[in-house]
Length: 147
Image 1 (cartoon, rainbow, N blue to C red):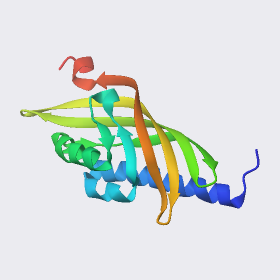
Image 2 (image 1 turned 45 degrees about the horizontal axis):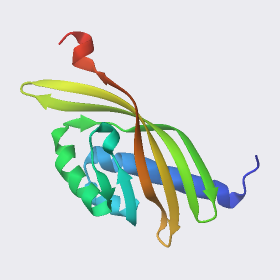
Image 3 (image 1 turned 180 degrees about the horizontal axis):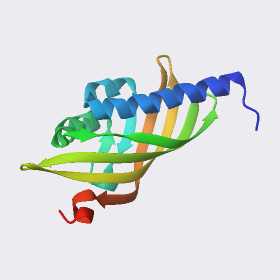
Image 4 (image 1 turned 90 degrees about the vertical axis):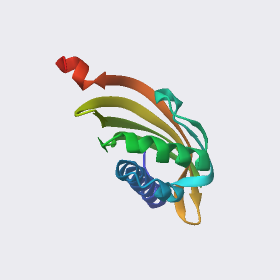
């Protein structure tokens, strides 16, 4: 498959946006997601007990949920992107360790998931117009270590 320069540029721009999303989530800078999702985006975080809804309701959910975690890392890989003019779709693997304070101890969860996305080119650049999490696996470190 031969890609045009435009297709390569589009893919790089989308990948940068995806990595930016992960950084925003890990920094808990939720308002910055307004520059990642389209205004009419549909976001489905229900695979791990989150909300399903529009951008404002999702940002409100994240503002409540993210402070429960003292640390997290969203590591994206296997980014698969298809472009069709000003729209696109993608499937992105995410490895997500998350630390939660538990009294004087800490609980660490490791999540494996896929983001299934659609993208749209806007005057401001590429944005996510829909995102659905698909659960792959969950690993609880203290359970494994007998803690």
